[in-house]
Amino acid sequence: MVIVPDNIAAKLPVYHMSLAVQTEKETTPEDAVNLVNLLYETYSYEGIDTCNTKGSIRDTYLSVFTILAFSLYYVGLIFVCAAAAVLAVHQLSEAVKYQFRYEILSKLGVGNREGKKLVFQQQLLFFGVPLMIPVPLSIFLSRQLSYWMLMNEISDKTFLHSQGISLGLFGLVYLIYFVTSWRACSRLAFS
Image (cartoon, rainbow, N blue to C red; front, top):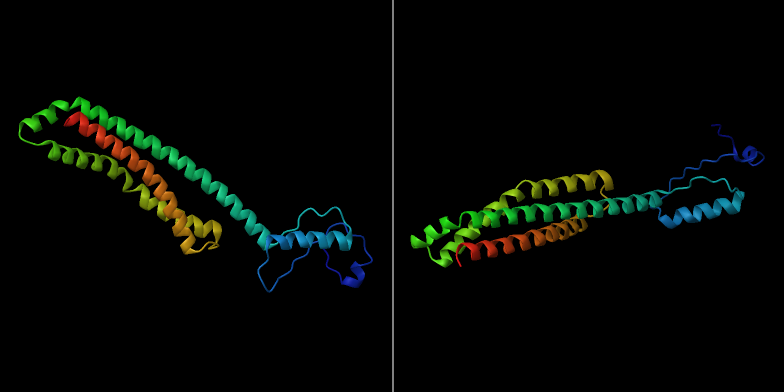
């Protein structure tokens, strides 16, 4: 690459051009479009292969991140549904398998209300323990990835809002499985 003064460069044919500009204010994706239009008008050169601004790159980067995040959360939701379904089926089969233990408890004087409370505590333990590591780890990793990938482009408020929505969605699905499993096991054990 050879850099020459403008008066000499104006006399030479353009084969390839690089332009680097530092602006006072942040650029937008529209600035890249305006820059390309300006280059076409000024040089009428159809061989412009790339023209980017920080704003257009950031916009593209955020779009890719949004698609990636949505895909990962979708896959995560599928895994949560699968894990919760496995837990629910396991608990239902255990309730049927050990129904005689629940009968012994009722013969020992444990009423329906106390029995359902015991089943609730058992379900809470089985459904709660698998959340102890993944939830804090997910929050930590997504926070680190947002710093690494987005370079602090989103505010903490926006991050916490999106994190809350995604955890709420996962929690809702998990809660539905938990409540369904608990009610079914309670009916099987203490009907």
